[in-house]
Length: 253
Ligand code: SF4
Ligand code: F3S
Ligand code: FES
Image 1 (cartoon, rainbow, N blue to C red):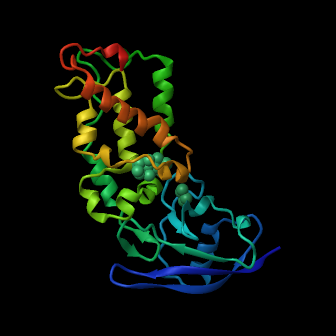
Image 2: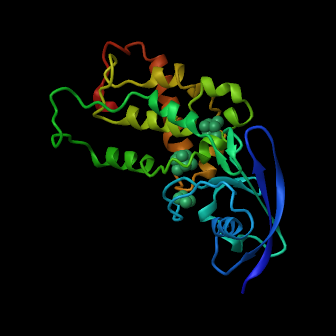
């Protein structure tokens, strides 16, 4: 059975904006994105919203729903009561372009700063050999759909915009962790050691493992436990290893 829901949606641009109230029809089985689309179709054709797959796989429709960072296409209307006001606002940590669309270029810049995977010299594609446990570890991190909800949620930048310069956020620290743990990565002069890079240039030390990033990840990636904490442990190992640089044991990586 359909009903009329009360939606409150943030409307505006980089200069100014406000929450506006709408009554909009909701039908059984719908998600928040369906209702936003109905708003566009019936009442505000100029409402800006970013989406693509409507299946939780493209990472485009990130927003804050009743103050919680969520994918609009994966948030069922059935989680709200019929008389509840549903408030939809843009991600708070990124500059607004218009309405629910934010400028997420911070994330692309941070991605570009991470040197890509480089296999050991002399190894051709097809000759890579890895233990299954190493393959499995990467697989978890590769489920990332780049929705940037973890980036949006982490208090290091959510509450302190200035930190964006020196902190790359959980998604990209996870990427560094993935490469650091990769047994075949041989990037740079240090033969694949990315620990100093993580600490000095990507702000790993800012992370105080509050785990908010992990809580909002729609792919249920254990960002903190499986990427950030192990990366921090590796940084500590490096600092307290007097033989580091002399005998680096690649088999332990
Ligand atoms: Fe989104 Fe999770 Fe990837 Fe962060 S790690 S960008 S929350 S899918
Ligand atoms: Fe931020 Fe996640 Fe660390 S929320 S503080 S990156 S554990
Ligand atoms: Fe693709 Fe929501 S529209 S994740």
